[in-house]
Length: 202
Image (tube, rainbow, N blue to C red; front, side, top):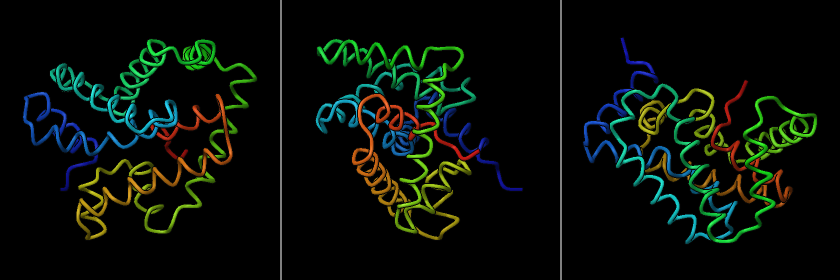
């Protein structure tokens, strides 16, 4: 019986928690693309976004022992990335009112009518962005988000290399970002950016 996606992910996290650098490189390749996309849409700077990704994963590495106990790794990374990015935006004197609004949006325990509308709009926009992807990019992106497959598992299923999967995912994220930036702005755009990380088809 083949291991489930959850078992495969947990095995990877255990290896990272034990300090295996090859496992951490795989972990980085698996999850860094989404963080970079979110950071880039928030900062509008490729250099700043790349620095943020490096710092976020450095913190994850330094606290790697905790990964062995994590059930929802995507949510765990998201929370770490969100907190780090928001803190950096504040330090670097980005629009304080805007970052406060965004923090408030994601800290509310129950959705207000405005939040519900923004979440609906962002979900629709993200779906449109995915639907506009080239066939292979869309297929790989959906395997990752809808079925939760790792890059290695996608490569095995499609009989292509992990490098090819990684390239298609990077291009898909870039195309999604461009689509969203052409159709949204402000808080809606950043909610879309964050949903890229968390999105999973219902």
